[in-house]
Length: 561
Image (cartoon, rainbow, N blue to C red; front, side, top):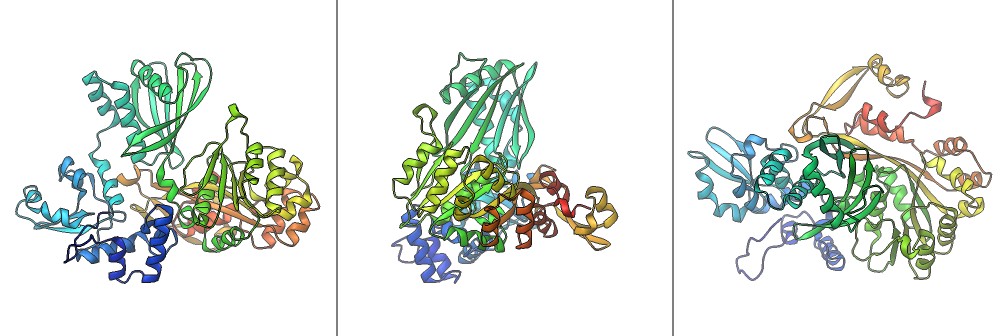
């Protein structure tokens, strides 16, 4: 967002802080805190205000629009169609961040993130909309850029154009694939060799979708290019290899994890994109309810103790801990992490990479970290007894420790740690909070509609539905499917959570070597919601669907009629 409108004396540029203060969206005291945070953390006041829930993205956009005395164009709620976007030539639209927002018989409204610059282009824009009055509306840069997806030709069309040039085929094709993956906010890129061709697929919102195809001949060049960039052996074709790439992108880098595995038809590649947009997530973005946020923050603000986040691979555990670390990352706090791999670099945090070649394991790294006088320690994952014991001891000796652990739910984590060999009294004394989570797709907000269904219909999807939906008919939500969500009806992901606080009677129970069911029963008695119940709240609030919830979580056994 460029707010470079000069003041009357032209001594300095107007800042976002000036705008928010002038339009009474924040107080001078809050603005000062935001500016101090931005200076120390080398980020922006916008990041501070959004992360702490002081202002929402929409309010931020409206404040800037008011400052420029133009309307606010909410492209998130009312996205421009492909037809609208293409009415402004690609080069002009992309270079100047312009998108057609609305068009009537005699007028058009063009969204921009820089009204002063757009005004200078008024005469040039008029030739594309003859005999129509042009006005401008403000929209955030991110929403305008999201509209530019309509300028993109299909991947295979671009592949053909690149191949026709017969120069630098592999690098240019890889660039196009990565660019599309980032545009669609894909978490992974899959190259899957078949007998005659190679399928390129993106994992978007947890679901794989085909993006394009390349010939086997071209793929050999792509494969070798990726091996070189990831520092892997190009002459090895029969063993699995893992590597990493720092891919140049927009004056910066995208970190990528690369995995190669030989299959019958060649070598398959899976690239995990460690995209920067994940770093900005707050608890609200992740789907943590206000009640659970209070539980989370209560545990996180204690001077010592352990917080465990459990769930299978790909359930968003690391993202949750990064959101917590980011919130606690203050000048007076020493935070050190040991991870495998370091997924997102955070300014002001000491991050250590596990390295098998130098014997830097979780356990050895954690021993070293404790001698570095940290206040907060993040251990990427507890995998063995040695790491678990060191972590528990650290949590008992004045350190706040966060880690992840593979367990199906919160209640299962305790018996698994006990079976691993952790002493019950040590665990009862050190554990503060166990969180289980799963990721599920959100209904697309652009095409979301409500519908009424009956208890009888719900029973076909969920046996015992009457326990959760007691009324004869219920209003739920779904996505019809639109350009914004690729006709799937879903766009983006949220998480469902289960929180178990380790206090009083739960500590006493741990000393008795309890079963998973005993822990679950006590947790529910103490007010803990299951993953399924948290998901039901999101269904009733129009965030996701029952079908999507049942894909990742089941009702509690004692309530499944």
